Image (cartoon, rainbow, N blue to C red; front, side):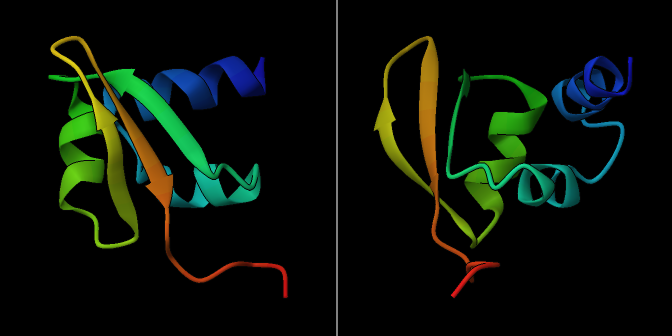
Length: 68
């Protein structure tokens, strides 16, 4: 299915995750700490780590909103 394909692309970072996350208005991401997506979001100025543990990170989207 398209949603599963998008999830796998974001998880594996085989595509730019930003358009997919914005399309679904994702405001928070909880993901394994050492994953490709977590490493990517940690370097993206539009995302901030708001909580961390040894196993997961929670990111909050702080970039420009699509909706006023």
